[in-house]
Amino acid sequence: MKRKENQPVEMPARTTRKKGPKDSVYIYLTTRAYRNAAGRPTSDEALIGKLAEDGISLIPNQRYFEFFSDTRDAPASVVALGTSAVLLLLARRLGVSALLHEVFGKRGACALTAAAYMADQGCVMAHIGDWCDESFISGGARLDSKGASDLFESISFDERMRFFSAWIPIVTEDDHIAYDVTSLSTYSGGIEDAEWGLSRDGDDLTQINLGMFLGSKKRLPVYYATYQGSVLDKTHLPVMMGSASALGISRVRFVFDRGFVTSTNLDYVSKKHISFITALPSSLKAFKALPGDKEVSAIHSSRNAIEGGLYAMAFDQTVLGQDLAVHLFYSPAKRALEEDGTYARIERLETELSKLVAAKGLPRKYSDLFTIESTGSTVASFVRDYDRIDARLAACGYFALATNDKTLSSKEVLDAYRGKDVIEKAFSGMKNQLDLKRLRTHSGATTDGKLFCGFIALILHMAIREALAQSTETRDKTVGSALRELKKLKRVTYPDGSVHHTVITKSQRLVLEALDITAEELLAANG
Image 1 (spheres, rainbow, N blue to C red):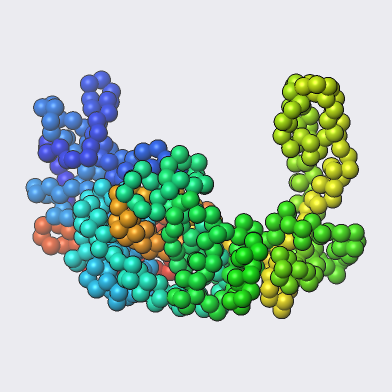
Image 2: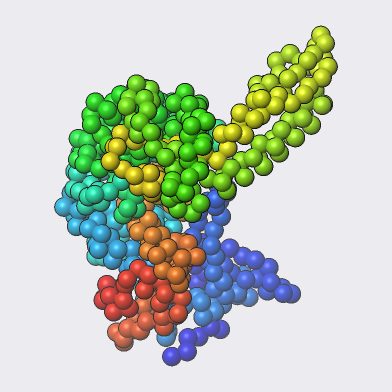
């Protein structure tokens, strides 16, 4: 039945006006408000009609009826069919729904609603009520912004730990666990752990640190903990490892970044018999000892080729007092890039030096590569220090990984370390797509609960991301673009009780296939 577009209707909330041709005024509905990758407020809009002659009412177009009911001949309800139902189906398949219900009872469904909203719209909770009205939500789980805030505040530490204790065995069996830390900024003065520290995003704000474990094989978040923003990451590692062990993360292999390599940390994992793999910092004496002349002459042998032009050799070596297997890797392609970068740096520094007049207090970046002579306070001359340059070039193309598991081959060590990229993708998704770069909370209790729901949202986000990446048809899609495609699927209910669904497009079908969800499952989930 054709809906009437020429009859004025009441102007909805959340609209903006934009001037059109002549004296016409177009009305746009704000469908989503969020911060972009640069942190600036932005929004998604839909054109729903024109301003009526009375200057108050709306002359709706057909798009209007996708969002609102009209009692004359419009649908009784229009519900976004795809996004929320897909997120809830994934949560059920992963076991998240059952665990939330087991731990939180009826509040578990509300926690999942908050997580689904965050996975779709980000962490600005002001519009969650509108989203619930426009989306498929299981009975009794609708939230508005106040309800979301109350939910966050109600989530206790014991409940979070009970969830992690049950979730960890599901995602850590025979897996490598990547660990890293990021910071989340806040304007609030009411969050106890918010302190000044090293901001990874360059924000001039107090922050909390968030350490997270992710499975490198299943590529899903495992566990997280927060701590004070001023505490150094490498200092907190034993505390994080202790809490993880208490929750059951023990029979796995941990993969760390080089920033966590300290004598204290290596001593801790050794005493606890924790299997690990880490990159060696180039500043360590153990790294500088490699490659020596012996290693350089041996590593280029075809016997040491492992894959993609890479060569590798393993050595038993003492690193910060620990007996480890050090795997030295050499990449000719990496060497070429690093050599080019070294010469470009030398030329740039020469240009800078030629413009300097004060010799006192020259940064070390100059003295590391040049021999500088001065007269009084003036640079008299400078020449390249070829011995130091040659030493730097000799190290190009090499990198080293260390492990206390001497049964692993170089390729196994490399594959496990490469799997650590999952945590970088997770932090990117958390900060950009879920918009958790800034907390937007005012108390420690609300912050803790919101981060927990954000963690559930991140599980759903990563599950979608990995599924899209596995399909040749969808590997170029982002999670956001896939969810936007699914959101166009509508369930339309008319006053006579009849239910109709919009046609599934090819793009939507490919996304559903990548997620291994059939149209029948989706329709059944929506009732």
